Image 1 (cartoon, rainbow, N blue to C red):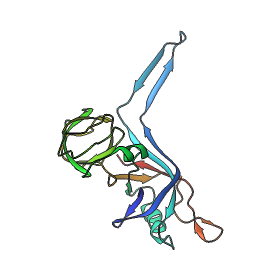
Image 2: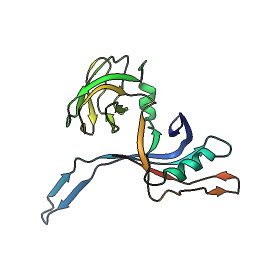
Image 3: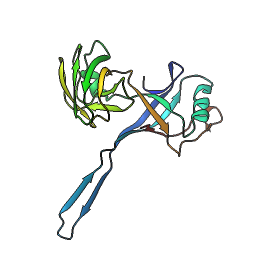
Length: 196
């Protein structure tokens, strides 16, 4: 179940429609002869836009999370995996070991116990950045990732539905409660941005 994670459980599930966006700054300019120049920055972060379904009758856990985390405290999210990826995945373990150097666009995996399709979100135990695989991997070996590694990795790579994203509430998220029909808590669409 994908959503906001707190105190060992998901306290609010993401609802559709949901957007998982890669924010990777690109500057584009056209000359008078219509030649295009493109400059791409190395910075990248994931952003999620989704509605939230509180998973307790009183929605107290979500209310407390929204108020206490505000715009400056880390919020933990179970990273949504692409539906097609989940259907193809045959991993018997949600962790493998991986090694790679800072700046690399691939890592070497070991202890891989099944099919890891491209489009799988992964996270390394040595830092909090989330990556996405861009090639399939069935056995041990090299798997391509996006974006390039921000730091060297050597150790556990989480690759299943337990990938946890550290993020922040965007500044337009209500830091409190909104009720629909006086009974149901509805905070509308919430934007979460990866904490880098």
